[in-house]
Image (cartoon, rainbow, N blue to C red; front, side):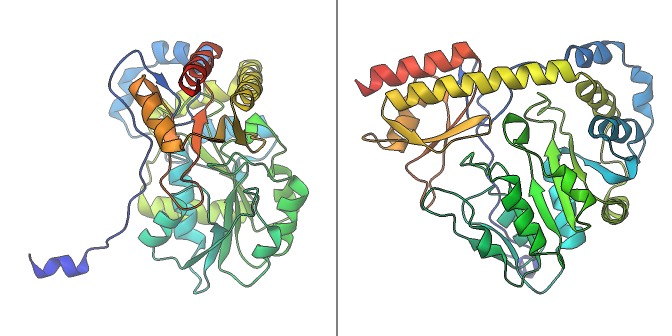
Length: 351
C-alpha cells in the first residue's frame, strides 16, 4: 500500500435507496412520484433540437431560472439552480459553512447532511428529535456555524409549523439557515415568503418529488440576491455548466403546468391519507406525515422482518438500520393500485 493513501479523504458515503433492475415490482423505497411528468415535458423532449447538444449549455441557466422565478413571483436573481437539490445543498455547504463553529441539524434527518460535513470538513453537531420525532426549536438557539433541517423532515415526514421555523431563523441571524423543502408540496406552508424578512435564509426545493423529475436532476435554492450571487460565484469556480440543455428545457415545461402539478399532488395526498387509515387498521403507528411517504412501525412484527418479506414479494420499501429508527419502515406513496397491493400483502402476512 503506497504512502499516497495517507492523503486520501476518507468518508462514510451516503447510501441511496435500492434501484432494482427486475420488472413488475412495486417500488416504494425512494420517494419518487408514481405519475409521469407534465405532458409538456414529453412534448418538449420530442421536439427538442438535438443539434444544440453539441454546444455547452447556458451557464446562467436563464430559461429555467426565469421560469422558477415567475412561478414563485420572485426576481431571477433570487434563484439558484443545480443538479438536483443534493448539488444545491453541497454548494451551500462549500459556500457558507466555513466557520470553526459546528453547524446544527437533527439526529434523525436526511443522511446526506453528515456526509457533506465530512467531505467538506465542516464541524457539526446533531440535535435529538423528541419522543414524537419532532424538532425541538430551542436546541438551535446556541452559538453555531449554521443550521440546516428539512421540513417536512426525512425520513419521519413530520412537518414543523412555519411559526416554529421562523423562530429558529430569528434566533440564528448571524449564520446561514437552510430549510430543505424537498417534500413541502405535499402539505404545509413553505418558508419562501420569509426570504424577504431574513437575509440569511435559503430555502431549497427540488423537481424530483412533486414534479416527477427525479431522473432529470433539478434542484434550486431561493434566497436574497447576495446569497444567490455567492452561490453562483462558487458554482462558476467549481463547474460552470452544471445543468445540461435537456434539463433546462424540460424543467421549464415541468414548472409551467401548475394545474397538472396541483392535480398530482392532491392525488398523492389522498392516497397517503387512505394508506394511513389502512396501516392504522393493521396495527401500525406513525406520525402525521405531510410528505409523500409514511414512516411506520408495527405493534408486533419487527420492521426488518416486514422489509424482507415485502422485498421477497416484489414490494420495495426503505429500512434504516440506525439507532432509534431501526424498527421503522419508510413507505413511499405510489398509485392507488400499488398501495392497495401493499395493504393486501401486509394484511395477509400479519394474519
